[in-house]
Length: 317
Image (cartoon, rainbow, N blue to C red; front, side, top):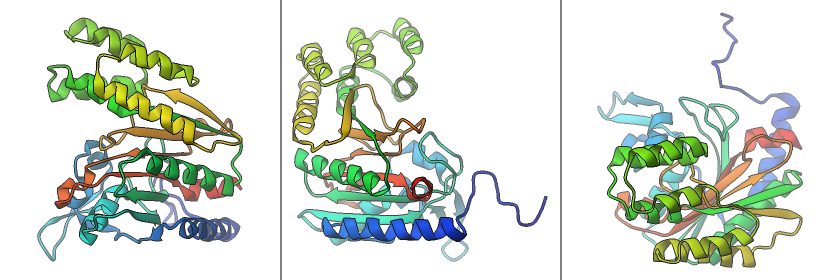
């Protein structure tokens, strides 16, 4: 093997590519500053307890090693969001706080979102507001970010994991069963769901089947209200989506509703969203609400945000 060869999934930017990236990075940070989002630069490594929090998916993607100085296990950040939760908790604010970042992260394996194991994660996160106006703000900022990157047209997908969570709360399922059901929804596998429902007795099997197929235009939301009218938490989650869809400024953006969407990271608790373009096979940017992630640091805060791989998207300009 040549000594200059990089590991699989690890890449770099040089020459014109690096200059293009830096130009876009500056434009993005100017945009975020204009919107009131303050720049933070989290450390590359932290104690694993701070990095992993409640997400098995983040755990699987985190490089870990023993720190000879402290004797404790450290991790290289694979996702910035848990670090923002720690930073916000440290500030001990009761008001609204807005953060943005552009940081290189490292993952043990590639996933269905990032283009490599060494993406440069850019994003913005808003803490301290449980109101849907906060979700609208970050979604519109995500769309502005992609337009700044000259990515058009954009298709915005809206969902709400609180519907799935409300259904789960109605069932007596063990952790392993819930995890398997999440994986089935993540794969969007109708046959696997049918097998699961045959092999397990669920109170709302018909609603799980219906949820898997609830995708389309805004009329899907009216259909969902009828299906979940006897489950208050799910009904409220659908109402939130209706309000968000109404308030969004989506000029030149097509909106689709996908109520079966579950994000890879389990810490999402409410509205989730992704942005697509016809020239790419997977989401270009994604995010959602994750209330309570900061509980691990002693302060429960409402939060919502988004992220994307700026290293990859900067080369599409």
